[in-house]
Length: 367
Image (cartoon, rainbow, N blue to C red; front, side):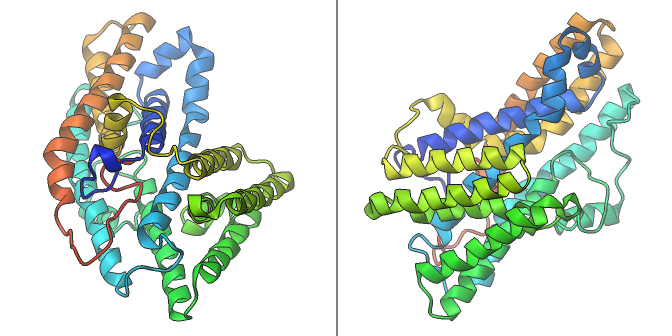
C-alpha cells in the first residue's frame, strides 16, 4: 500500500481488506450524518441510519492501528530508526499526505458552493476564508479551533501528529544507542499514558496523545509478532492484550475494544505468515488502494448529490434513499478518478531514494 507504488506481489492483502472495509463505513457514516437525504431514509430504516450516523465512525480505529503497524514497518522494522534524517522523512511524509489532501480541499470548496446553489442545509460549511484554508494546509485547523472545510479532515492532521510523535520517539531511542527494547519501552509508556489517561478525556481529542493508544498498539504489534519471534511473539501480543483489557476494565470504550481486535487480527496474520495472502481478490486490493482518495472526496461529492436530490427529486423516502445509494456509488467513483489523476501523480512528488518508503495509512491507498 506504499505511496511509491508497491506491486501486487508486495501488497498485504489483509491490510488492503481492512482499509477497504473501513473506508466504506466512513463514507456511510458521513452519508448518514450529513445532508437531508438520510433524514428521509431514516423514516424507512431508523435503526440502520442511527447506527451509521453514531457508531460507524469507530471504523477510524482500523486506520489508527493499521497506521501504527505500517509506520513501524517503514520507520523501524527491527525497532531501530532506519534513517539518521528524521526531519527529511517528516517533510516527505507531509508532502505525500498533504498534496492530495490540499487538492481535495480545493475541490471541496467548489463542490460546497455548487451544492449551495441548489440547497440550503446546515450540513453545508460556511464559505471558507484564506486563513481557514491556510490552517488546514498546515494541518493546524483542529488545534486552532478553525471550522472544518470538509468532514473527516481532522484525521489527516491527527495521523501526521502520530507519525511525527512515533518518529520522535524512535529518534530518541536511536540517539540513546537503544535497540528494539528501548524503542518498544518508550512507545509502550506512551500507549499506557494514552489508554489510562489522555484517552479518557475527550478534551484531548485534537492531540495525538489521545489516539496514541490505538496507533502505538499497531506499532507494538508489528514488532512483537514478526515470524522469527515464534511463540515468544505470541506471548508479547498476549501481554499487550492484557494491557488493553486493563484499560477497558478501568473504563470500557468500544473504540478501544475494536482497536484491540484489529491489532490481534494483524498480529495473528503476521505471526502465521498469511498477512500477504488473505483475503485474496482484486476488489479488496483496489478498494484498499483508493481508500484515501475515497475518504478525501466523499463529503464534497455527497453534498452535491444531496443538493441535486433536494432540488430535483421527489421529497419521498424511497426517492431520497435512492439518492443515498447513488451518492455512495458516486463517492467511490470520484475517489477512483481522483486516485488515478491526482493522488498517484502527486504521490511521486517529493519521493526520495535516500529515505525509506512511506507505508503509512495516509499514504496512497489509505483511509
